[in-house]
Every structure is written in C-alpha cells, then in structure tokens.
Length: 298
Image (cartoon, rainbow, N blue to C red; front, side, top):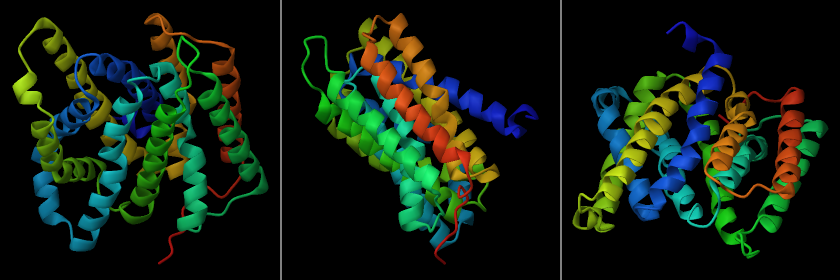
C-alpha cells in the first residue's frame, strides 16, 4: 500500500493497466458486439465494487451524489461503449495514441468551465496536440487505404468525456475517498448497464462455446483490472495531485498500447509516429507551466 502512496508509481501502474485495455477491447469485440462489451465491463465492475458502493451511497449527500452520477457517466459509462464501437474498425494502437488527447481536453474544458488558468505555452501545446490527432485520423486508415475518420471520432468523444469526468472529480468530489467514490459510481451505473446487456441479446446469444468463454475472459480482465481497480487508482491520483497530472498517464499509455498492437500484428506506419509525436509534444507543453490547478466557479 505504501507503493500506491507514490503518485509516480500509481501513474506507471495505470499506464500498464490502461495501455493493455485497448488490445483487450479489440479481442472482446471480435466475439461480442460493442454494446455487449461496454455493458459487460460496467456491470462486472459494478458487481465487484458494490460492497463498497452501496454503503458509500448511503453516506453521500444529495449534491455529492448528483456529481458522482454525472462524473461517473462521463468517466465510467459513456467511454466504455465508445471505445468498443470505435475498435470495430480502428486498431488498438491508434485507439491508445488518440486517447492521449485527454490532457488537452482537460486543459480546454478546465479553462472553459472551471476557470483553470492557461498560459500561451499551454495553448500552443493544445494546438500542436490537435494537429497530431488530425494527422492520425486522416492518414491512418485500414489496410485497404479506406478512411476510418468517423470511428476515430468516437475515440475523440471518449477522451472529451474522460476529461470532463476528471475535472468534475477534482473540483466537486475531492472530499470523497477514492474507493468509496469508485464503488458509488459503479453502483449507480450498474443497473443501466445491466439493462443494456439484457436488451443487447447477450444472455440469449451466449452459447458456452470456447470462443464465447475466451471473449468473456477478455472482458472480465478488462472489467476487473482495467476498470474497477484502475478507476480506484485514478480517482486517488486526481485527489492527490491535479486533473491534468492524473491525465498525463497518457504519456506512457500509448507506448504500452502500441507494443501490444505490434505483437498482435497490427499495422504501424510513419503517420502513427508523426501524429503520436505531435500529441506527446502538446501534452508536454501543457504540463510545462503553471495553471494546472482547478479553480471552481463557486
């Protein structure tokens, strides 16, 4: 436990766990539909954390409960469906690199909605990061050369959602312990996820084949490690530091995602290097100066 008191240790563990999540999502959507993967991920994590979540829900006041539900929707519900939908066409490597945009959107929405101060260097970083994202979306299509822009855009929407969640947690939920907050969030969104899972046809389509059990194994690892455990650590990191520092886990995450992609035989070309490099330069510039603390509009 002393190890997880060190913010850099938490950052590295998160990068390894979340960097591996993209290849697990890819393997999962080979077996199940994107809606089934997302619903399984949220409902399984909910089952694991419910023992902490239900007592936490009873302790939270109405205002805190409202922000927990909103923050959880942006951070633990919407992206869980957007990534599987995107990875039907987008490679896990590209998904991991585009996910690096989270700190850039954190800066943007922090300034727009939470009065976070931004420097000219940080604004320049955001522009360079967006340029890198555009390179990736336009020039990294499928093996046949077709554009997957609309699917890559789903990942952009997921990163926007993650950034809003981080800002909400830092500004509105900093007083709630990370384990209680994670448990409360997944307890709130467990039932909606279960309803989606039922209507997705999962329980009627699951036939107990080797392929289905293997797919369920991928989703289980994704839910328990990449969702339940990782979100506890992420909330803890946000509360110990700042939303921008916590989102800088995306420095290391793309490296892990790309390595898994290469091992799985995914295409990795020149444009991945250019786009990813521009995004990482943008993130570096964003974190260079002051203005990373949240000032709430109370």
